[in-house]
Every structure is written in structure tokens, then in C-alpha cells.
Image 1: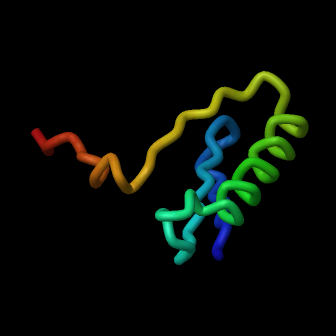
Image 2: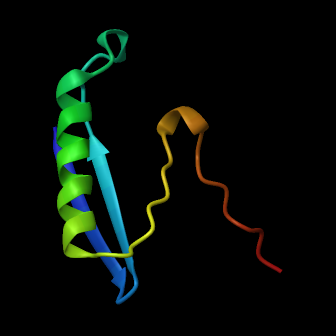
Length: 66
């Protein structure tokens, strides 16, 4: 399992969790780690908003260049 944090600006932090744990069982270890990391971040960054995206949602689409 990999947990990567990327500070993009003073107001944007990106969290990436990668795991090879099978989703068939609901990935209990990955879920537990993600929940722990989110709780720690939310306690350290009170008032922060969380946006969730899963690979199951497909790739992030970038706006076409004008």
C-alpha cells in the first residue's frame, strides 16, 4: 500500500492511496488506512473540505486547450 500526499498550494492538498488489495472483500485494510489518514488530516486541518474520486470513476478529464 502507498499513501502519497502532495501539497499543491497553501489551500490544496492531494491524497493518493494505492493498494493491490482485492476489492472483492471490500479492501478492509485499505479502507481502514484511508479512514485513519482522513481523520488525522481533518483534525490537523479543521474546516477543510474533502473531495473524493475513485479510479472506478474513470480518468480525470482535462479541459481542452483553447
